[in-house]
Length: 325
Ligand code: GLV
Image 1 (spheres, rainbow, N blue to C red):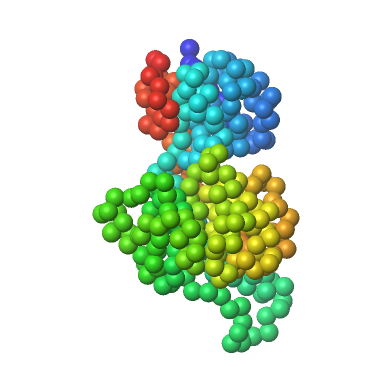
Image 2: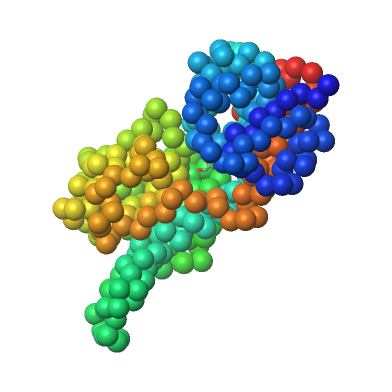
């Protein structure tokens, strides 16, 4: 008998077709978000779940779903999964690294360019019928080329952003708990600095570290004050890393110039302060959202789940577990 697997939100047809070769697949193709009770109920009898960052895979859920053997996240970040609880209960947890690195780095860059050059404001200016013709001081932005970029979080995506910055001839500073090897620093022309040095010197600060209790409000009022008044903050990773209320205040009082945001505290709720601000570019957590990448992410998660349920080690296993056949 095939093991049952639940796919918690809509995925692509080929993802379902692949899994159906190995498992009995139940999928929420209607894409209605499942609350904790519904998720637990629908997981009864399931050996696997293909989930995403809006599903909370925590201890209470695991207690209610003792047959669960794998939680395959369709995301590289996995702060929605209690990894320690999974490990303690022998549940494999997996993510989707690599396949989204370039796409997410592109979005960080897009946010940086859009914010520096005031693109969303410029577009609204045209759409609102305000444009009366070219003039010298129209929508003056700031240059990205040759500016100083500070990257906090130098994992795969951070390094790929640094690679993009080479083409813009930027000076790159970075900070991370782990320093990169000298040859990587050389290739990327990236200089390791303290967080405070980075905040004080960067024209653009891009946040690209995972969310964890240690990174909660890593950027708050005190850090924003350390940035230059001309600086722009880009959050292309997770909500909660920035204290959004402090950021709204900093943007209001000119502590920093602008922000480009693809992640929000408590999303999809957004601090209403951002909505009326011209110096903020907003995106609804679309860092990895290209057709090719989202298809690749869904298939990666499917392959992880199938491997776990058919006795192989999932390629992207997060916890250190021996695989149960
Ligand atoms: C998206 O935010 C991801 O972690 O993949």
